[in-house]
Image (cartoon, rainbow, N blue to C red; front, side, top):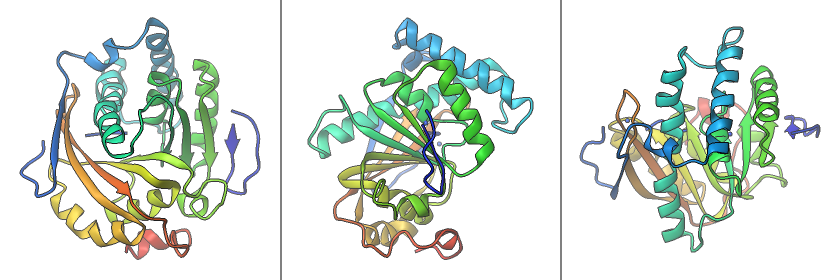
Length: 271
């Protein structure tokens, strides 16, 4: 299903991880063991869906800018494997701190772009309900098409801005997990994502090799929207860029109704 920013309903989802240095926050490690090891754990059907997704992405990329990557092998390494690498820290943290298994959860991919990591996560975890949030109409058109091609019934596409959706009762504090990759700095992401997460849920941001300064600047913003910094996880995937960092926040309290602020304000005036 595609839902527009005006909430018209029609029909039919990060993660890039970067070498961690010494961090003051708790650090956990999750490492791949072999080339495309996460991909290797998928079923034949899931692998087929991934290949259909990658082929469609590269076909559409010829006429619209969806990714800078042009080769199948690069998409598999830089995007698919990196997206799948989020699953171990997500599952471990959710089980340890949210009091539940990951058997079935609702996840929103904020600023999904070409559907990374959301589409890949939806394929790998068909029992999850995955929402792809994207503000650009042409990307939503691609997402709607590719979801039809791969045949994923557990994906919903929402066209709109996170600030608007965060104030809408249909979406506010409705998700178990929010993820974001290459969207904005942590202060801004906190206001985009955490209003969408239920109390007791997780927000996971993909960050670079040394996000400590950015995290420090964002601590106040994270607290203002009802969360606390839980862990900074080093995740080593098989992409050419090696190890990346996942910043994981736990939603402790309801987000005050004044957040998120009007569209555009979080980016112009970060908390």
